[in-house]
Length: 326
Image 1: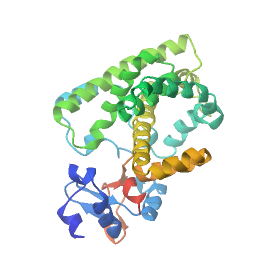
Image 2 (image 1 turned 180 degrees about the vertical axis):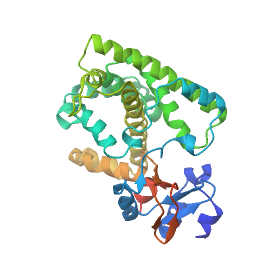
Image 3 (image 1 turned 60 degrees about the vertical axis):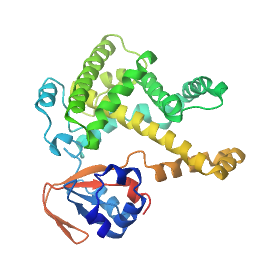
């Protein structure tokens, strides 16, 4: 326990080289990090139990960085002018979560994704063509970033020329969650998110009058079992979460997979000889690299976890990256 009391996940050095720290976390399973001012769960089984019990361990407000740290007044002012639907998808519990997820399910079913296969292959090929003659490439900027942002642009029905802007929107959405952002950058991110909302709101209005075969049109048209459509806040929140969930994580996953293959050349040879094992490799890369390092839950009542008395309103970090190596 000494390493856990002397150091913290809040330290950049620990985040960059966390393996010894994760080993200490596994031994503890569940503990309080005073620098983060929250509990941390690193035990796989315990984490599954917490994630399944949204009645006691809620998603609502759990990802709101404003509840972890007081935002600058400029951020508050910008957000006051924005559409804010905080209880949506990853930040919602059933039945709110269930309603929106069900309404957005169709475009992400296997048969719908299969229709994108040819265009995704085209995007990957085009990315490779930009550097294949050079004999080397920068894996993140030239490969891991362009592919998911371009796929997302196509999925939403936004012109590919806006791919770089989509990346900026995604970064601005997720960066404050790192809790190490400066006030100046936080203000920039808030403004970028507001710019994103302005752009997507106009796109949604366009789809209402001129429908297309894309995700934004689906959002405008879909109805729940009661015939109610998504609100503007729900649509903007869903698009924003898609940008993070589909872009940032995929970039991390691709880059992490490439790094693993450069570190384990024998696995490269194995995959070349047995391409049918790629599915297993992708799953293992996701486990080892954990594109989402962790998310949070808020306790809705006093409870006890692994011998710790946890008060109502406490924040718990579910450190997926540690649990995946438990």
